[in-house]
Image (cartoon, rainbow, N blue to C red; front, side, top):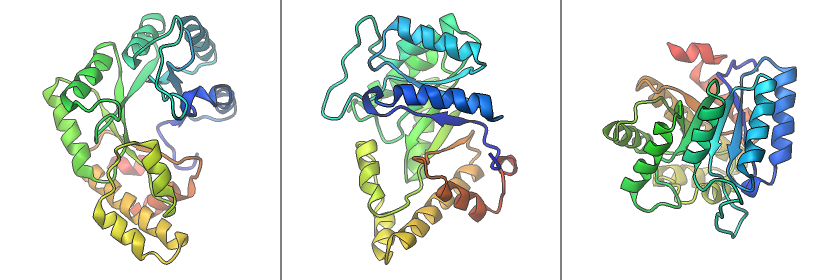
Length: 258
């Protein structure tokens, strides 16, 4: 809270495994803090009726920001459309905007490519469908080379996508964590310079220093290029993000708007 973020988001586990915990935490944060809450909402395992009822509960509680996602199936399984549910995030966006037009809706973008779509041209077409259904902003998957983000933004502009694009940053906190990141984002690219720096770290404490330094340089460069927003993926570990703010010489987000 002292960092004064524009929002905090609460995610699902794969296959909706933490769905109820997500909803409980969203409601707790809304009641007990002054933070703006963005709840993740996926198509996995939910019917249109169930999603509509949940959205009504959120609306009644003053929660008016949703990150609309197709969602990941359980490990080792392929996504299957739920009975009376949705196949695509664009359909979920359309439902939210139709029934709850006051809600702000974010969608996912993939600077390095969507793991389920090898055709990069089609990938942007699918993203444009989400935007055309009323998405208000795009929050990207994490990346480690800002050139991938800038290229993604340019391809969005070519496709007529003009809503804000928020850059996703996930600081590395240990050498082991990069393997988890690789599993979380299939196709994620780890630059050789980053891997070399991590290989020089004598232990995980120093590996975290490398990760924080790398992420700080990414954020500095993004800010210098006028990025519309930065989303820190924390995986429930906030210390690395706090260290990034410290390295930037700021104590809260308002100072990043200079």
